[in-house]
View 1 (cartoon, rainbow, N blue to C red):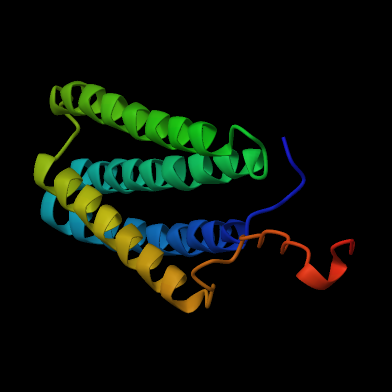
View 2 (spheres, one colour):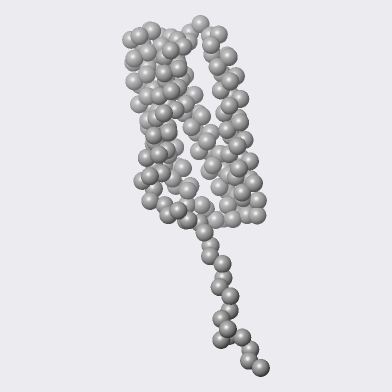
Length: 158
């Protein structure tokens, strides 16, 4: 592993913080609306749905931050894509398992759960876009230019 820290790390950390704050707002609003519409099952469903969205958002950001630890090494590109794709595969498997487990639960109000997950996913996408747009990172931030060849004047004369 290298000590080079990619410039994307602060952006990912900021996305996690903003995403967490948005999740709290969605959780409170979802619990209130879910409670009004469906009682305690609505509250529980809103909380679980928002928690799922936060966990899935966190897995993506955490996998990128973990993969960035390999920056500067010879295996950075394969490690980065392997870790990030592994995180996405993990999210897919966990999502499918949770759908089957949660749909059989008597305390789940499916519409509130669905709307909470959708609000969390759309909210996290909006947060990611806003954070990246405001990051003011150059397109080629972590590039090292090659060493220029020696000039013809430096060549030994015969």
